[in-house]
Amino acid sequence: MAITIRPVEKLYFDGTHRSRSPEETRAAVEPLMGEIGVTEIVDVTPLDRLGIPVYTALRPGAARGGVRAHAGKGREPIHARVSAMMEALERYCAEYRGDRMEYATYEEIGPGRAVHPEDLIVPRELVQGEKLHWTPGWDILNDEEVYLPSNAVFHPYDSLGMAVPFFRSDTNGLASGNVVEEAILHALFEVIERDALSIAERNRNLGRRLTIERASPAREVLDRFEENGIAIHLWLLDGKTGIPTVAAAADDTVTKDPAMLVIGSGTHLSPEIAALRALTEVAQSRGSYLQGGRTDPGRELVLRKAGYDRLKRINRMWFADAETLDIAGVPDASTPRFDLDIRRVLEEVGPHTDRVCVCDLSRTAVPVVRVVMPGFEVSYMDPDRKRSAQG
Image (cartoon, rainbow, N blue to C red; front, side, top):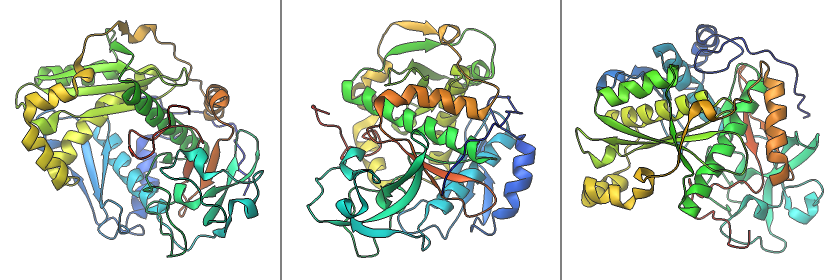
């Protein structure tokens, strides 16, 4: 189905750009929680001394291989609550529910119509004559229909016993919004963010340190960390594009808990919003850990065995010295409209990919999309999917 990017004005600008206020979004989304299996929405903010709002939406019936606790963050409680509900909605919509898929070889679908699996940076080669599941989408870069390996669309991916998965399915490029244009823009940002993180890790180079001197929502959140003895190391990553990706590494100098050496990141045309997203994601990671909703027993064992000092040494690039830039010196390329922001993003990613694929996964009145950009890296999330030295 063709996707048309319509002119859509932004109407809310407090720490994020949206086409509706958080209160309006809550009114639209909260009634859907029962339908998608959310049984409880929990305020986990009090678990952390920071007091930065973090909420969790619990969905016990999530598909096998998916998470049951969906975290949300924000500068205000309403932002965090809506964020948690929207993430739950995204994950619900990404689960395979009998959606139409073609079962065919790459050659049968046709090179002109399909994304080659190997363009998605996969751990193995495609076997000649291998049949895969394919899902239709829309390429907004070339304005044409495109077929994608379903492995890259659904999460958790269910091969129905008919195909061999190429990689562990993930949620990269999965986003919701008040309107489809809003969802597409945030999905694009996430793909760019994960690519920038993957490049930074591969090159062992985070770019430049970032400071925030002027008063802003990001500065307020940064002050909250510092007042509570949590050192934040902000970085402006060197990615493929000129779109700001900010990463924040947190060091809890009070508890010296290795589990609290956490990282948050954010991408946005507005550097201030990118920084705010990175900072609130740190708070979200802390809250989720303290709640126990996303605790990985294997990771926990490694953390305890390594200890705080050793873990800091292992991750020393996040705490190293580097050239410093104030956020005021980073250009803000955001516009008053979502369609214009999308156009700017496409101009930035165009030299680095042949296609920008959008699959509409909406299952309720709230738009949910998956964006896939061949050639953009995800090794930060999945080390098996690393670009070769020649790539």
